[in-house]
Amino acid sequence: MTAPCNASPVRLLVASTPHGAALLAAAADAGLLVTARERLLLVANTAPVPEAVPAPDAMPGFRPLRDRFGRVLSWNAAVAPLHPGAWTPRPDDAPLWERQLRSLWGLGDAAVELVVEGVEAGPGHALARIFPDAPLDVYATGLSAYGPTPGRLDPLVGTRVRRLLHPGLVPGLQPLLLAEFGVPAEEVPGRALRAVAARAARELPDPGAPEGAAVLLGQDPHAPGALPPGEEERVYGRLLAGLREAGHRAVVLAPHPAAPAHRVRGIARRAAELGLELYEPQGAQPVEALYERLRPALVTGRSFGALLAASTLHGLPASHGGTAVPPAGAAAYEGGGPVAAVIADALLPAGAGAGGAPGGPEPADTTDTTATAATAELAGLVRAVAFCAQPRVDPGLRGEVERFLAAHPGERVRRWFPRRLLASLALPGGLPTGLGPVVRNPAVRRAARRARALGRRARR
Image (cartoon, rainbow, N blue to C red; front, side):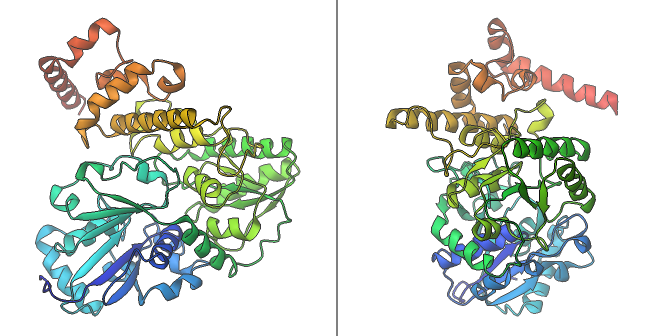
């Protein structure tokens, strides 16, 4: 079912997290989401067990965002009993679903525009298939904007993306997400994001923490690179011990909404053992609103995007607490690679008690030349990590990555690249110098691919 091209467009904005809803509200305030007819927020609760986690519009702090949208719709209700994050319609069924959703949401024959968090999976992928003529805007809420597209996209989808909206957490660093399609990146102004957070903060219950408390950010247990439960408890125990040694006595725990309760209890036990006062805000509160409500003395944890937001956007001292570490092996590159950890390690102090200057640590030499060189090195490192994570997404990066790795043989850069991974991609640092031309030979690489395929068949 194709909508007439002269119909006034309806813009469907999809949010599956409080961060997404806040970014869309800020983009609307900044005039980045002007629409001729109606702006509809489509809420999607994509947790593995949606019934166990509140939807974004049911969380504290959402009410002040409500007036940016004409209506709030539920993706979960529309596709029930199918899972809202895993389901995608079959190609033959897509026209039937378009007819159904147009009727259900009262869209009529209006043209549709989509604003989604991603088009490679989840609701964004399903909606892009259901509305095949809809132009696409993609947004990123954190550091994923600087990483690679998570897999090769169908060109019929990738070429429909008009722009990438992102919060600009790393000034001077160009996003890589969807860059293979020439998608321009557009920053949502920081002042708009802070204004949205400040407005939401006024609606939050009082966390009861004293002035100067530190904030400990919990990790998303389903994010790429998330720590398993046992290791997570050990890492957060070290973070709490570091806060204790630095003189902090009051800590506000901001767990991820999807974190199981037993993980939070483990952190609480460790805090009690260390003699720390641990405060848990009522309900799953947006961390950006907590920043504005508490103005904490320090923000730390493993949520690297939220840490950079605290530093860059909210002007707060932030530290990754030594958790931004190189990957243990090539398998850690699955799901986009350690791009977020690379950025956090470069821009934030490591000590759990370190505050640093708001906006990131000051380099020893602050001349323009040094700052430019540091930004260029970070950009090269991020692009190299992104290529190693998804070498098939943008093969044109290979030459640039080879030159970067050859020019940076030191441990400071090479520690982010497992030797076995570099060898499998025939990149500098993976094999002795004399073997490089042999490995890069096309015939040798074809033979290696055939051998790996035969090995996989034999194992099966």
